[in-house]
Length: 279
Length: 237
Image: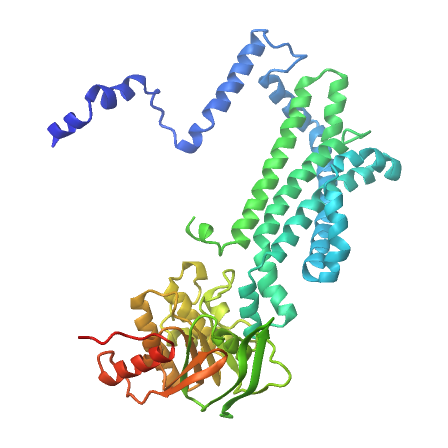
């Protein structure tokens, strides 16, 4: 057995080489190993900052960023701005998601609704909505309204498009079965059409959240006097790259948190899907 | 319980210039088991869809059907987002739905799959769930649209036995659409051959159950029906 093995697999190629070149064996689970290279980059960044290769005006050292984050948190400045930003996103999302769902239901569930709603929606969605900022400032001034409106607009289209497509993509054979077994129109919508459209709509929700963050970042660059965007802009005036990075980190964490939330919703609402049953 | 004879008269259906059903008339005895054979495009699915109420019947046609009607399709057509028991009682309301679903599922041998998701069922199990969904409505007319065509041979044999058992127990007027002559002779008391939108042959199957393929009467019926379908068999030497 061992002889034939040695004959078919040359020892020096297959058995020896990996040993010579192998990485230092780390007793780390694979999930944690993924974080090694980002950690290395941060360490390198720290080292370069300390060696004076990166000036604090270009980019503050990670240690400075952490210290600033801690300071801003303790002083209550960061939580206050975060709350303002979350409020804007929350209000904008509530409006945008409601509008997107309502429009998709009207267009998806009736022929006439589609004729009225879908054409203008398809036209508007080709417009980069962030280009509407100047118009929004003229319409709504520079207070909270244009910021919330921009977030709402960014969230409306993804939800509209995916829910509409989901409703129209429902398997006709399932609708037919529902009819045969006594579901009326309302029953069909509730038990067949909407559940069938849900996976698609949840993808839309994830896009909407991403779009909402992006809108928030842009909106908070316009004459804001509070919020994470204001914190970043204000820091720019004083060349505080550490605070800018703190702001960016907060944006990133908010985005990650929102994504995790949608995943959680998906796991619960789409428990029937084969991929989730086994997972 | 009103046991009615199924009566269809003057049923004509055209799609464009193509006449699918041509002034068709049909009567089925209450509680009888009938098979409807036909080649593809013979109109058998159209007839079944009309009886199921999925296609509206033309005004001049007379349809007198036992009710309620229940259908089992070629595919199980279960709603993947509803548990097995919820699929069984879809469209029903009232109390004790879960118990009714459980009773029906036990009858088809799936009493332990009440809370399973349809995606976890095998093809045979899914089709048995579809049968339970039809049965739970206590139909007086049971329409089966090639319900076993997509199943493997072994599962199909078990499903044949199950359908006969359920039919014996509940006695709905049963009409099975199939293109499988053996299946028709095995299950039904009467076999209709549909050709060109008309009933081209109406054959009574007098054999006692369970039926055996090796039975000479079975073979003769089979040959006769294949002949009506335009398939000539070579004589075995």
